[in-house]
Amino acid sequence: MTDPSPLPRGTLYIVSAPSGAGKTSLVAALLEQLEHVALSVSHTTRRPRPGEVEGQHYHFVSAERFLDMIEAGELLEHAKVFDNFYGTSKAAVASQLESGTDVILEIDWQGARQVRAAIPDCQSIFILPPSRAELERRLRGRGQDDEAVIQRRLRDAESDSSHFREYDYTVVNTDFNEAVRDLESIFRANRLRSTEQAIRNRGMIASLLAGGAASA
Ligand code: GDP
Ligand code: ADP
Ligand code: 5GP
Image 1: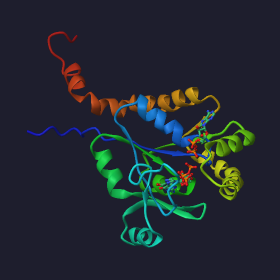
Image 2 (image 1 turned 180 degrees about the vertical axis):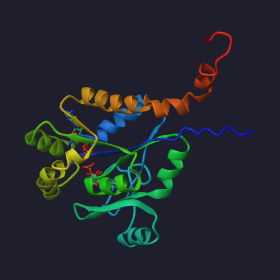
Image 3 (image 1 turned 120 degrees about the vertical axis):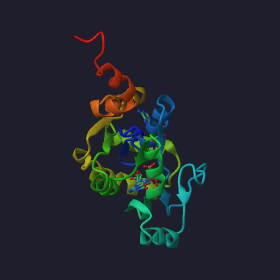
């Protein structure tokens, strides 16, 4: 007979932040600490920054191709952010979750709303910078965007940040290593939920609860 208990499925995590708050570097550090978790590679119509690799940082596509993907229902969510389109492939996320891997979406708050509606048991995390001045320092320090782009992102930071209460967790990225530990704690705590543990340890739990000579 086949085992009727469900197989482990990954959890979907959303990570959002105003541009420059440290989302990309925090998630990269988390991926080095934690197993069974993968980053979803978004599609975007933005041009690659120096050093960005097709298929690794983003799938860089034309606006025409992006609109075709929307039309064909291939995107789990999509949004226009800073005049460019960004979106998450439905199929790529689904196959990773089915294989038991947790998946992280680094997306904006508009996309987060769409994902919560489609997949209510996702977990969402918002990253805040410690101050406006520090956000500006980090955006400039990254040294990858021109002045107009930096100004645009700083202007949008306040309205982006105003959505933090829509998220399950908020991490303030003051000290980098502490923020990575905070992120890791969220993932570890979710993996310890009884519903998750019951699936992951179903064999052990079945034998623990099976009764037998030692039980009273
Ligand atoms: P960065 O945040 O400064 O690194 O800039 P990016 O160009 O990487 O991201 C631009 C915006 O698009 C951010 O607000 C992201 O959260 C958002 N974003 C990135 N990928 C996705 C995605 O797959 N879906 C959605 N909805 N938003 C995304
Ligand atoms: P985002 O993906 O949110 O736009 P990044 O991860 O690109 O942000 O970080 C923006 C810049 O800030 C990067 O140069 C990064 O190294 C730096 N940074 C991130 N977190 C911290 C921190 N806690 N302290 C100082 N600098 C940081
Ligand atoms: P950047 O242009 O700096 O790479 O990203 C700018 C913003 O776009 C970030 O806030 C990032 O989270 C968001 N973003 C990146 N990919 C996606 C995506 O697939 N969907 C949505 N909604 N936002 C995205």
